[in-house]
Length: 65
View 1 (cartoon, rainbow, N blue to C red):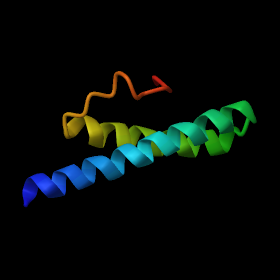
View 2 (view 1 turned 120 degrees about the horizontal axis):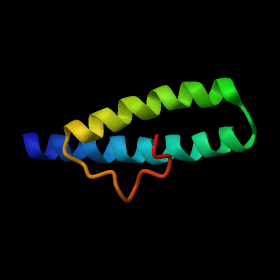
View 3 (view 1 turned 120 degrees about the vertical axis):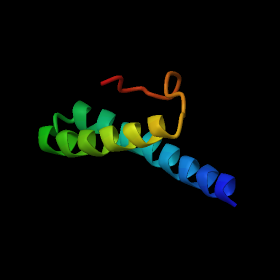
């Protein structure tokens, strides 16, 4: 049961991580500084969560901050 729960948490976090990165790239392109800053906070939280779950972000982290 716990493995299934972890898999679901990882999938949800990875989906959100990918979405946040897309929004960050758009915000940066549009020079939306405040929006980018808010997204960056969420990005770091998701990155910390995924790292704590031993997810290798090397290939999926497009922002690299």
